[in-house]
Length: 295
Length: 116
Image 1 (cartoon, chains in turn purple, green):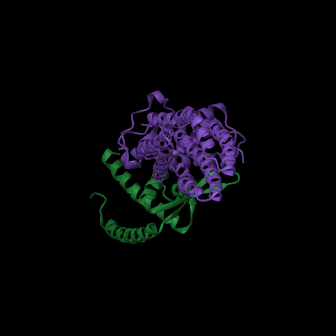
Image 2 (cartoon, rainbow over the protein chains, first blue to last red):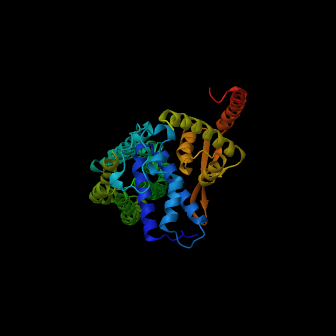
Image 3 (spheres, rainbow over the protein chains, first blue to last red):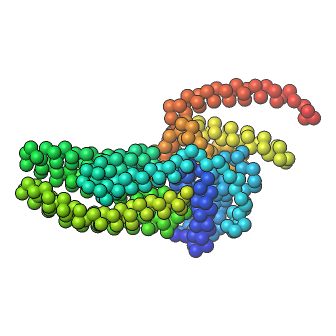
């Protein structure tokens, strides 16, 4: 069912209310902020649906929001507020200072999560600067750090990427024994292709879920512009990864058939600058920006 | 009314609303909005509808209440709340103690004169 239309003034009032709510939610943990924000938007939607009019007027929206109470009162229970709650129509410039609520351990955990995520990707990408063995080890360690970081992600949407980090880790891990076994028999070399495919696919899905979840998370904190940019990165990463896969896959197949491991290594090194650019602009820098925005 | 009286009333409301909230969730699973509407009807203490939301967050944090997100074909996903096992145990205890306290207070009230 599409949302019931609001008058311009009602839309503005609702927008101001939700903006104040997002501002107040900075003082609570991520999980609580998500829960309260979702409940309040659902409350407004349900109350609007109960109205008999075809369009929501300013007075109707004001009545709904007045019944809810001020946005600042929604983040703490009544006995924790020591200053009077402001009038609903106070302009944002006049709103009183909210008594600071101690930041919970889980709120500071969000910063720790971003630091770990940054470290994981930095380690994985750092391997691109060094010979094959270090690339392999750095990738395993890096994706291991990412997997562990996602187990303590600030929202369930971000944590949903954890299984795909594990798949990527297993794919990388399997490449070394497969490579070693391929020296004993060419048939084992063909196993490298599903491992490589598994890595590419899981990495793309991981990035998609991870950055989509982070975009939703920071959007709820009022960082809409940064959220949009973060979401847009997913498509760029997808296209870039597919292009790299399109180049490397045929090379890998030919090398497996012809039992010539030199060609993919040469091509791989030739694509290293792409990895450096992608790694910095699409992964590390966005994570650092989000960290600075919420830190 | 004095500020001290308001503080006392706030404490009373806070305790009662939590008890009412847990009892409502004991009988059925509810969306936040449904719970807020029922609480405002069952506990007419002049409390805003939004009071239930930070309360639900705290109860979830304390492990007394759990929620699950339900996808809806006609709109955005909605969160439905229910009592956890710990919540049921706690509620049983709270109800027992409430009855004991209420009975005791009721026994005191008729004995008070208007001037005391």
